Length: 141
Figure 1 (cartoon, one colour):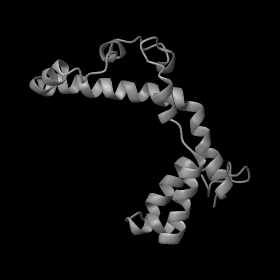
Figure 2 (figure 1 turned 180 degrees about the horizontal axis):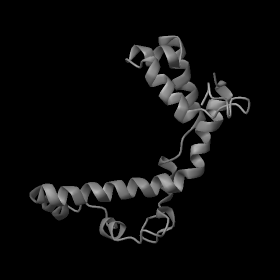
Figure 3 (figure 1 turned 60 degrees about the vertical axis):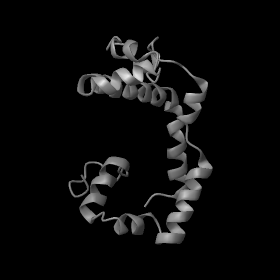
Figure 4 (figure 1 turned 30 degrees about the horizontal axis):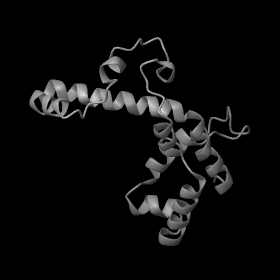
């Protein structure tokens, strides 16, 4: 298993990517509006007339693919949006407490929503780095 402290530390590391997360959110919104423009022009035009489209949507879609998104001049570095992209330790501590008190822990919660052992093994393979003693061990690869 992974210690609660390691989980929280890893979770807080997300804040290092807040600028990137903010940029990805902006691009996702721009892509959604572009999809709307293609699939439902009437609704798109209605939103356009009501000034519901992000001002930088088209510039984001026209961005240079070689430039990292968070460095793109078309991405708005809005301090409030970046702050909303950040995570907070007390939120995770609360979630872990609720999972423990209501379900008996995260694993019991996952079981209660239909996560099977195969799902759990795939999740662990993605999220957990093997111990140095496990590297190269054909049983744990």
